[in-house]
Amino acid sequence: MRFHWHPLHLTLTNPWGIARGVSTEKVGWVFEIEHAGITGRGEAAHTKRNGESLESVKLDFERVVAAAGTDDPGELLKALPSIGVHGASAAAIDVALHDWLAQQAGFALHQFLGIKASPLPITSFSIGIANAETIARKVAEAAEYPILKVKLGTDRDREIIGAVRAITDKPLRVDANEGWETREEALEQVKWLADEGIEFVEQPLPAHRLADVAWLRERSPLPIVADEDAMTSENLRELAGAYDGINIKLAKCGGLREAVRMLDLADELGLKVMLGCMIESSLGITAAAHLGARAEWLDLDGHLLVSDDPYFGVRCHRGVLILPDAPGLGVTLVSPGHD
Ligand code: MG
Picture 1 (cartoon, rainbow, N blue to C red):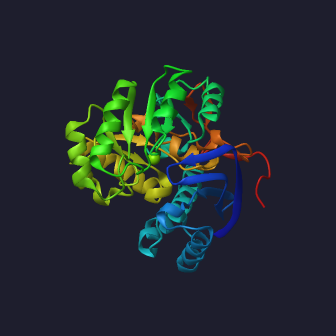
Picture 2 (picture 1 turned 120 degrees about the horizontal axis):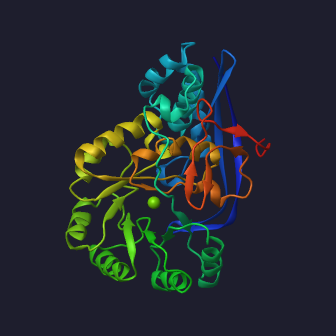
Picture 3 (picture 1 turned 90 degrees about the horizontal axis):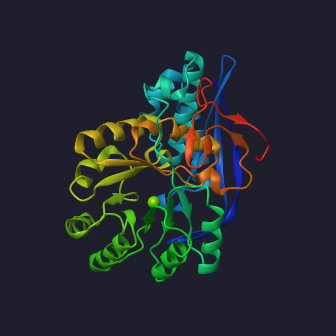
């Protein structure tokens, strides 16, 4: 088995604003496994929020390669949890191994995992935080997408929703990214958002405030969905008492195997599931999309927000995702956007 990794530079079409800050580019890693003439690939879309950096992901890759001690991708997938890598690094390796194994078995990834290709929920398209004029332009540019997810959690939330609603009455979802500080403030915002025809609110309060979220949920006219609070399957039982749903992301939970565990547990606990993403290329998005038929909501638009995605995989037509049916992820490199 041979391992390679290289940086992946992605340029955002528009500066990307969320409650925590603004970015114009995203640099992640692609991890590749080559064995028996088959290459499996996975993307590490790390985030500072989760204590990750380009350097920390690289160190994780080096650690896994040093500890691998096997020439069997299936064995390495089994051993991965004991090597102790998490989040985006683990996701890249887990996805690369699944890609390799599914290609070798001759199945598209969703088939390999026993999941249907369709129907998939329509994906939302995200509108980041910006001034009212830019938001109006972005909403107009997103005309083809039937559902928008609007980033809030600022002191200008009403101006932002006003700018969106001035242009469209399509279904909206809201992500506060931990941006509201007190449960009373969150309740006031959620009640107002219900009047604006919003479907649900994601992560209204900072993570680890489950008692406040439970208080809010009891009074909230809208479903409340956990993102920053829902990292892995470990705390889902606690979340079920506070939230209506969870946002599962491969880069948070460490890959497909843990995502499937979260999907199974969410079903058991009656938690609704959104499959979400970071800013990532078609490589990472396609991996998540293969799980799409098991989700209630999809927010798999990271690749639609960048202008130089070097990969080609899942297609998106008016918010409808169409999975590739080639073996494995079904992702190909279309342009050398990396170095
Ligand atoms: Mg979120």
